[in-house]
Image (cartoon, rainbow, N blue to C red; front, side, top):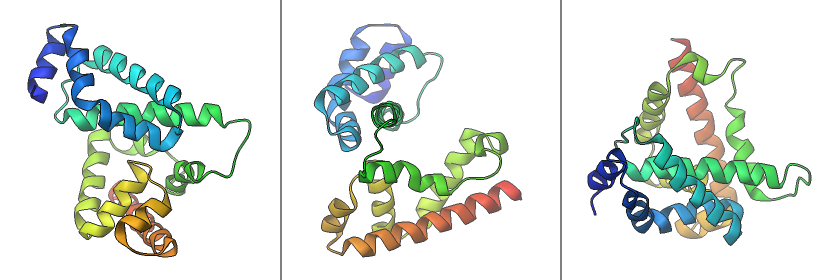
Length: 184
């Protein structure tokens, strides 16, 4: 079933919309949750929360890209679940590092206070389009799919140190771009 048809089912409040959404995007969303949580039950709980959140948000929201919409919801639930699970016992897990790496891009005021979410998305898209294809894949694999440094290094046939350096440089570039866009 096409995404527009699934969205239309949500707008009609047809309960089969959830089944269609789950049928089409289960694997995609499961990978996002699994990469962070590495626990089947926790990942399943995130997916159940995702389907319910999609039901609550459509309408009034009509997503342009359904996969990005449900992916963002899943990722948010997975990050929340991960932080709750490891709040007391801060392990030395790389995923904790992923959640904090982007925190380096922090202003004394929040980005949400300075620009609307739509503008933020535009700036990030602009940033990603400026990156070489390999750099873009590395950045997205790390910060969207939450792949480990090792997995990304193997995928690109380079060392883990090379990936860490690449990510650090690109975070600094994104920070600079956000700073310019916000302060202009």
